[in-house]
Amino acid sequence: MRPAVEQARMADSAPDRVLVPTLGRPREDEALAYALETFPDADIVLLAVITPLDAPLSEGGILERSEDRRAQARVSATDLLESVADAASDRVRIETAEGRPGTVVPQYAAEVEIDHVVMYGSRTGSTGFLRRFLGRDIAATVVDRTAQPVTVLD
Image 1 (cartoon, one colour):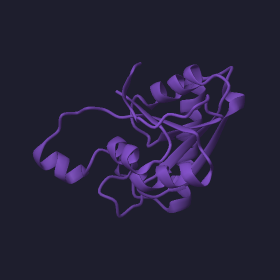
Image 2 (cartoon, rainbow, N blue to C red):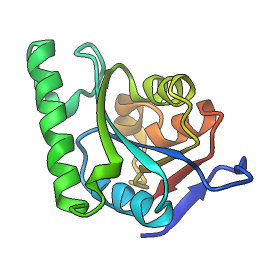
Image 3 (cartoon, rainbow, N blue to C red):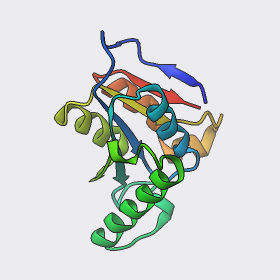
């Protein structure tokens, strides 16, 4: 695990609260493991983001009722936590939020007074139709819109 991009705005001291958003994508366990290892004294918020049904890409393309999707997001986040951090799970809190990740993550970070964001972002090299369909890279959008430092792992 290595940070691919780290936002230039760094805090003067170690963060007290770190946000790790999860969208139900592969390798997000690496972001959680990195946050736990890099910030051993910080409380971690694992934010399960539930993409709106009208978004071009919702988790797994599953069109279920909102409560079912929220429950499934929490189960997925719990599974992610259990796969990474047995000993450190007491300092990880799971939350859910619905909305587009590029909007929800920066808004949550500001409202809950998060000190640092750690997330996984892949460099797929996609172009053309795929990039137009999926829209801008979520990690790049989060970095641009978040006032707190953001570490993006690839």
